[in-house]
Image (cartoon, rainbow, N blue to C red):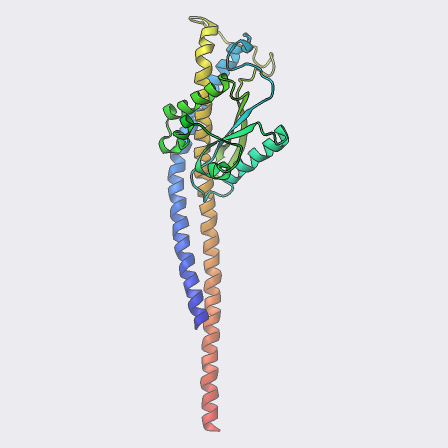
Length: 293
């Protein structure tokens, strides 16, 4: 009977877990809808802004711009974007692994590479590491998900631009999960600063029929900071939507696994109960035969 009680407790425990994972799946599905709408609406604007900047800069010498200066390899900052919470499969671990792989393969484990953590999970992974980077300004803004607005992300992007302009870092990269669909997230590593020149003149030769006022140079001076802010905001919105998709998928799988385990436990319980009943019948029959003997 002790075995039966243990199985009953396990069935009850798995049932409770299944209710929790099912509820978390529904919550993530609701949040995913809002996050997906946000990134879907943001992407066309970000892509068009980058396209305009590329078309304008194709005819200019970007080296004259403070954010396009081609510097020698030196101090590098990698901005890692994860979530604040777990229970979303390999969502956060994939970012940590990608950063470690990039540092190993691209920078030969150089001590000049540091990591800025946006999200509690990557902060937990690097807060005791010598690569962990922060300052007083960024510390107050590292929890970007507390108030996920363009103004707050703009402040982080502005600080990154200041770190580059001051020469604190020669390269800045952003690593995040790009939202593809609810079941698929793709880790992206993008160069944030310096701004890369167009890859080929032929691909960016069509500058469009633009009228420039006051001038092309002044427009780019204003457009580059705005484009960088939008680029970081898009990366965080992508990561936010990808997180909810990953959690919804993980909780769906967890619910299915709990349901299968509950079925197996119920089958084991029924088998044990039948065995116990059979033993009791055998004991009664054996006792009756002994009395008749």
